[in-house]
Length: 491
Ligand SMILES: Nc1ncnc2c1ncn2[C@@H]1O[C@H](COP(=O)(O)OP(=O)(O)OP(=O)(O)O)[C@@H](O)[C@H]1O
Ligand SMILES: [Mn+2]
Image 1 (tube, rainbow, N blue to C red):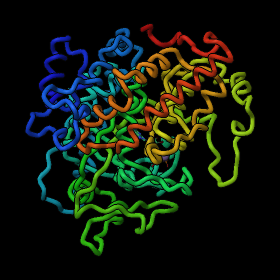
Image 2: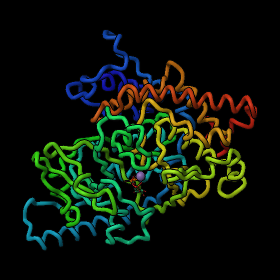
Image 3: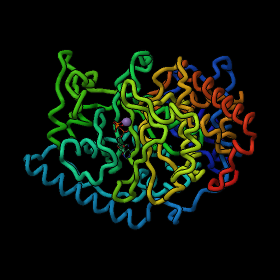
Image 4: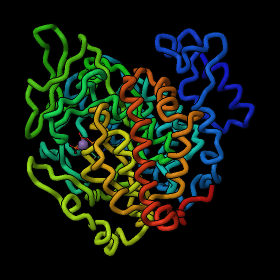
């Protein structure tokens, strides 16, 4: 209700700058906020002041204008993309027709899919630019989140990498074969797509101490929280993610035409519908997820343009961890690792190194030790931003701050000036990170997304990042440590 009555009029008054905040301007009766504690519980009579709104109105966030639509700064050429999507729609319609004829299906009656040029997923693709996955003041992102939280699905299938494992797709298009986890690509009524990651762990469960990060389970709420954090940090390197309940029978099984996928569904002894992943290991029925009896929580990650339309490279993280029980990587044994790295391509480019340091800061905040690779759009070349896909192993332990995730920061002793400015802002009482995160996450249908201890851990970790920067400055001086980024727009 606060969003609807206080933020929305304000946004309109200020010229619609801040639609990011209006992710879900629901009418008061259906506001998801009522069942959760207000961010400022002591203040009952007056509406709680919105720290998130203030943050997005701060000059650091407003910054310089974003690139104009359909220019070279953008990932896609508008007309080429539309031609390609039109072809995809025709192909999809042909396939559906063929499939239904094969099965003599007359029910349910379905209409041929059409490409709507106003669809929010299409706009999202068209707005990806060298400055990030969406513009700072994107009008599209809140609408896209709304779509993926509510739209019906028209198909469900494995993601291309899992198909590669099963030998049923063109592997040259695959970034990295995987498939340990239960994730599916869902297509919606507007032809948009999202990656569905089902709930595997309850929000209250903490990862046990003896569990290695690489066998830790994937958390749907971590994907959602990571998107919100990335937006608050103004990185805009995580694709939009929304949580929702999925009816796994109607919205997955009934719209799946892939027989492999159909074959992994079963009914449990408790009469719940379940499914499991088909892959090389950990993919038996024991690791299935189940609805209750049909409904299951999950995160939906908006899909990026296909690799054909916008090729991406997957790059090994130079601070990768050893994926064995005893191994150690170079950065763990060599305190001068960064000096060596800096002398060689591509990290002799300071922008690229600063991007890695931003990523480390992000991963330290969410507690993600599983950043083995990152992806980049080839179109933006060396100076492009890093895409932070797959954040499902964040938010596992709130009581532990894994300082080694910050190695790129304390070994290189460098940070982008704008990143530091934003972090400092979020350490102030007026914009406190845990408060803006709590508020931002209330916009999600599955709120509350993070438990209080996880939210509070963010403030503690932020302080540790600032302390690390401070000691770097004490040793090396501000000029060496805080780097003005020539590729960022001045703020
Ligand atoms: N939003 C997206 N849009 C397009 N492709 C995506 C998206 N999310 C993930 N992918 C592709 O699918 C691959 C696997 O996704 P992700 O890492 O999130 O799942 P995972 O189950 O953790 O897999 P892995 O075991 O490979 O880490 C990614 O490397 C990426 O190429
Ligand atoms: Mn992964």
